[in-house]
Amino acid sequence: MIHTEALTRTFRSGKDTVEAVRGIDLDVAEGELVAFLGPNGAGKSTTLRMLTSLLPPTSGTALVAGTDVVADPAGVRRRIGYIGQKDGAGHSYRVGDELVMQGRFYGLSKSESVERGRQLMASLDLAGMENRKVSTLSGGQKRRLDIALGLIHEPPLLFLDEPSTGMDPQNRANLWEHILRLRAERGTTIVLTTHYLEEADTMAERVVVIDHGRIIADDTAEALKAEQAGDHLWLSVPAEDADAAVQVLARAGEQLERTPAAGTVGLRYRVAHGTGTLPRLVLALHDRGVTVAEASVRRPTLDDVFLNLTGRSLREGGPALTTTTEGQPA
Image (cartoon, rainbow, N blue to C red; front, side):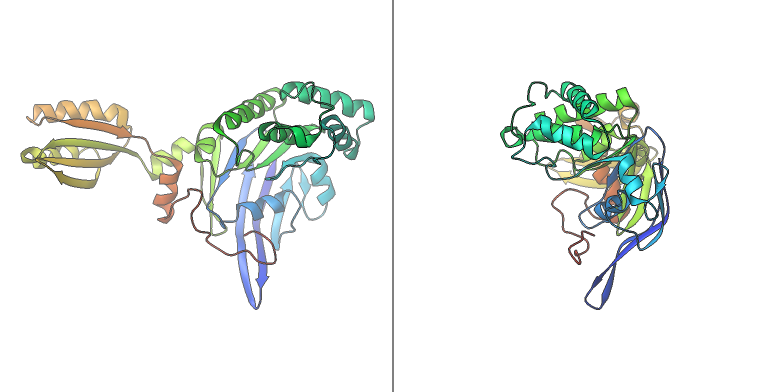
């Protein structure tokens, strides 16, 4: 569904050249749900804008839904749906009119547009709102309307650029329920950018991590967490037994921290399969005469993966890594 080779984009900033995207090689298969992750300024938005034909690449090639983004950008737009970060419907228009107008833009007849709009509104819990002005909808309803607008022409590929940013947890959950149900019904390929790491972790089949304009990791969330971060075990043992505990724990993983505290020592280790390893370690420590006062397992997050890869946090609110130029996000 998507194939790129050495895709780049540079911007001019005065006399300087800013490399926003530096040679992206990417393949997305039909039916996949792929999440792009990266801090502000990593190149996510620029990559998405090139794949949706909104921004021409400086060099390299990109085929989207079988169409070249440079040779036939209009053909790309006919074959994709795009849900941006801001509301797409006109606030002073009626919901039903916006859907019909969108369908007509894509070459559907009026009757086809009305029927497709009716089906989508039913699927997205918007039924009965045809005559309401967009401005009267709640934030969650407006985002679901955006999804309907992006799907009116039944595209095989849907781009979601931070679709749930600013929504409360309940509306985020409801939106994802609708997206996943529509995907299951229609087999739509979805490319997602998000600042919510939990969304990428639980929803996406693949996670593509972008930093400084390059792909630095591409795998399932579970594989990335196991390879790059690992589970963390924390155990508290009596101070006099700490050395004996270290000897046992050294065979299980890598020591990350040793913290003395009021007659005890806290030991933190990186291990594989923490929930299965912890009971065996507690038994092994017991056999050595070491009493474990407390123990816990912390599963890694995608932020841990990025921290391990780059030494920086992926969390929203971190500093931008590059500046924007000529009005375009890097």
